[in-house]
Length: 453
Image (cartoon, rainbow, N blue to C red):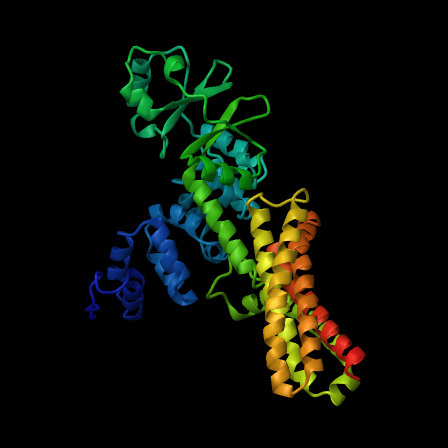
């Protein structure tokens, strides 16, 4: 069996693994996999066609399975889980953090979930049940219950000895300890930097910080991500309604959350899920996309219906058929710009019904300025092209009307959809296009009918 000649430094790991798989070099592929981090393995798996993906997954070491599964998108993860034996799934959960396990276990069949729960010790089972008791999109659903707490009255020397005793049991990504009283009420934090740089005889109460405000378990995850970004947090405490410390959120979970939100906005603009598998089966991908194609077809028929009402006008003035896509296109671009701005504002918590009026006024002003500018440009071109001042004035007026309509819809539609519980990223683009097409055609052909016939 020939080993690929290219070295890892010359081509990407993905290309090298694909080369190994193409040449049935299983041992070499498995050896390379052992050198990769879970996130890198997940990236490679998602970039492989289905048959090679399954082969590579089977080559993976059991102790790599759990973390790799959590790095995969939901669709790819579910596809691999369908081909896994129940015992292998349970084994994959052994090295998962409680917060990851809480996300993972909700996607499993009930019989597998019960088996996973039985495999946990009493302490881990209680921790998992605590996280599962809160909605997935809240601080409680995002948190990890694995924390290190200290009392305010003990000295720093006692804390240092306590940490040495814990050794490897100190949770990963620990940058601060949480100070609680005997009732587990949250009091503040003790940064590791302060712990090792202050006099060991000082008490925790003298050194601890009160600056990190805890998250309530029901705080929306979007607010969690926003505060982590604003204050450059590495970790933060989570408390229940009574102020008891119940867990912590670390920056790695927030980074995943921000990435997922970004992918959701990007993919949603095309009517796709953020978990869309690039190499999913044809029928599965077709079913997902058919819905939005059908909706788009209905909106296209609506635009065509509007055009149909001006059939006589189009027959008499053929130039209108040539020019009318310009009006709709300019409105669509202008509206999309405003729509994107509004959706981003909602996602960041910067736009609400209280300040929507200011955004609307600003976008109307922008639409008017751009409308006048490009109406003059297009009007001059159309007038010269078709030797008609009347056509130039009609298309200029229609463009201004459509850009203004696009600004209104682009600013207010996301808020309306959000109020109705509909994702603006998914539905906003289709509805906006419908409005700009209909208003563009109606204004252009309507004005032409009134003033050119």
